[in-house]
Length: 276
Image (cartoon, rainbow, N blue to C red; front, side):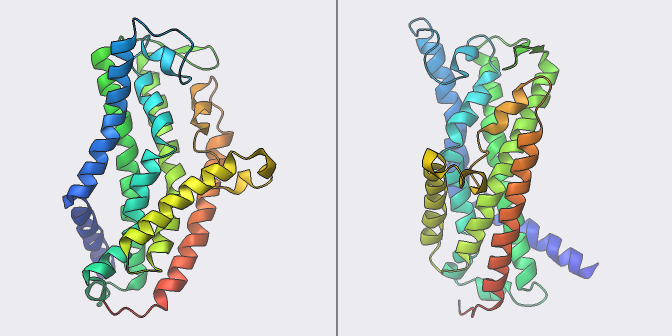
């Protein structure tokens, strides 16, 4: 019970520190700006824009405001979400070392393993928060600027408003799971250095490299192993019936990255000499 209390207190402290930082709120504000800018741009240019141009969901925004959230996720996933997650994950251990607080956090009864787990869970919690910010802001601005009604899915079927919200929550869960592997990579890189900016940059660069490799047809054999492979496959949740295969495959892939890079972070952190 005592160990459980220590872990819970450490987790609450981690979240408190994370969300007291101006940087965190600035990143969340930037994510919230994505759906707002999309909605305002579509609203302002609606009278002059030709149908069929732009991203897949862009034409449907004017017919149903809920598609603002979906389009914002399509825009955010390649860069904005990985960037913010990379900043948080890369700062987990390296940030404490750079501020000289890592040594004090490792004093009993915290311990290295518990601290590592808490840091990762905190980064995972940010993944949930970041994705929700995009979706909730998209729904809100969509309701304000566009009509909302039954949603026509990619399969051609129509669903009601309440089921549409359920689908959006499923998409939120899908995108959140997609970012967990990147968080584990960032945690591992963060154990390798005392310079948080370096860990952040390396994590973000790896997310870009993974997507570049995923765009090369010559590397088809490698694509299913890239952590970014399923990032945009949430479109399968907009079909009737729902195609769950990509959800399961994505969860399994991310779990593999969590296991591998979690083990690497564990091995590195337990043998590391902490001097700061």
